[in-house]
Every structure is written in C-alpha cells, then in structure tokens.
Image (tube, rainbow, N blue to C red; front, side):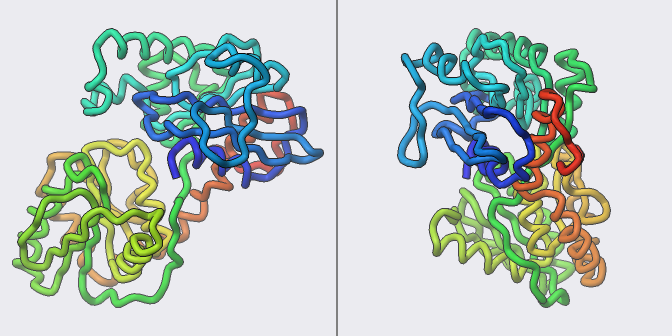
Amino acid sequence: MQVGGRVAAAIRAAPAVVAGRSVVALAALGDPPLQHHRDARLLEQPLQGGHQVGVLGGDHQGGNVRAPRAGGGLAGRAHAVADEEAILQIGSSTAVDIELPLVFFLDMTLRQALEVRDEWVLSHPVRERQSWERRQQRLYQRSDRILTMGAWAADSVVRDYGVDSNRVHVVGGGATHTVDASSRDWSTPRFLFIGRDYERKNGPAVVRAFATLRSERPDATLDIVGDHPRIDQAGVTGHGRLALGDLAGRAHVERLLRRATCLVVPSVYEPFGIVYTEAAFAGIPSIATTVGAEFVDSSCGRRVTPGDEAGLLAAMRELSDPALARCLGDNANARSRLFTWPIVGGRVLRAFAEVLGRPVDNLPDYL
C-alpha cells in the first residue's frame, strides 16, 4: 500500500473519538518528499455518531470514491472540503486556500531530500524544486499541527523551516505486511536484505561485508530481495523483486522472514523504514542506518553510519551471536506493538482532537 493509502487506512482503523462533521485528508499528488501516493483516493469510514473521515486525492480508480461537489482541479477540491471541519494534508504538491484547521503529515522534507541527493527529487528542474520549497514553507507555517513519521523529519521542520516545535509531533509508521513471530533456529546466522532500491538501501556494501563474515562463519547465509544485479558469491541467494501484492511473492517473503535471524538494510537514508517494523513483527533484530530509521535502537538492533563498512561488518559479526540476536529480536517484537497503522491513526486523530478542542483521553500519545 502506498504512503497516502496507509495513512488513510490508519485513520479508518483508529479509535473513533473525534466528534464533528468530518475530517478530510487532502492527499496531494506527485510530491518529491512523499512520492508514493500518486493514486490516492477518497476513502470514507463512519466515525462516532455517523461522522466521516476521508482522504481526498486525485485520479480515482475503483474503491469508495466521492466526487468533488462542483468543478474540477483545485477549485473543485476546495469546494469539496468547504463544509468540513479540518484538513489532513499529505505532501505539498498542492496548496488550497481554505480557512480550516490544517494538519500536515510527512515522512521527510524537501530540504532533506535535497541534502541526501534523492535521485527522484533531483530529476526535477531547479525552478520546480524552488517552487515546491516555497509552497512547503507556506504550508508548514500555516499548519496547526505537523505530524512526521520520525524525529529526523521533525527536526528538519523545526530547524530548516522555523516551525515552533510545539506544533510538530512524531507519530511513526506501521507495519503493512506482518508475519507473526515464530520459533526459529538461531544457531546459524541468516541475514536478510529487502530493498527494491538496491543502491540506496546499500545492498553492495552488505554483500561486501558478508563476504568477509562468510570467511569467518562459513555457515552464514544472506538472502537478498529487490532489484539487485546477479550475485555469484558463496552463501548469497538473490531472489529478485518479490511483489507483496502477489500471493506467491508475499508467501516467499514471509518464508524468508520466518527463517532469518537478522534483517540488514543499512540504507544511505531512510525517512522511517517500514521494513524494520515488519522485521520486528516477525521477531528479528535489524541493522539499520543512522540517517532516519529511528524505529531501530540499541534494544532491538544496531545502526550504522552510511559509508562505514567496518561498522557494518562489526554489527553483522555481533548479531551472528545466537543469544544476542534472539534477545534483540524479542525486544523488537515487543517494540513493534507501538507501530501499527491503527495506533498511528490514533495519533493522527489526537492532533485533530487537539486543534478542534475535543477530548484526547482515549487516544495514543505522540512518540
């Protein structure tokens, strides 16, 4: 599921305690920092007292879609939310001038995307990026609450855009595909790499580190899932891209998660890293990056600075210890319960309750 859809589903699954007419989420399309919601749709779910939460998006195909009341484009969208109480905006490609409370949701800022030299962002003309940044600045200043998936983005909103930290809160993200933790053989280190973007997820560095580890631990294995090149290396099995929307592909990934003893995805940067929460649900620790990816802490894995291949090898050596890997895996599984989409949705609803002056007693706290 794409990011916009995940947030929509989270709100629909969250405790329904925000009374009022309705809350509409404006899922802007084609935004660089949040580029994964191009097919956002209007999703509706009855709230307490018959009220509605929805996600207003662009091109719709199937699903429960409510057309704008009048007109098309931005004018139609503005008219469609004219009778609502508040707006949740995902991404900054669109700015609608409506005098309603605004809650903004993001995984990383445009400034961060430029700093880490995100290829998709850099593919856009400079003038277009500058326009995005000006619009993002206005939206952040206009927002009553800004909700981020991680502290990395929250720090950027405050530092780079001058937003009052009291209006910025971390809500996290949830595991989309979960595998229940099961008994597994911890005696042999079995590393798992999952990343469609093989280069950004630092796949080549993982393979190099594993080659050294394998010379020390001939029983160690490494499974790689994603758009990787052909790899002819002892102990390494490439599985290519496995589509989680496909039953066979999903079953394949689940089997790999059930047999792995450690996820290793030390990305160049990771705004949040849903894959780490999914590994945690499966009961295994993760080796993650220090750029973002705050879900992983020392209680449930290790974090490695991008480019520090000696540090990566050290982390893989450490988590080859069966007792430590199992202990951190148990901790990760316990921590994962704070990172489900219904709980994330509850944190989003908490922001709406605050700006609308409604009770927040039954809603989860921010992170």
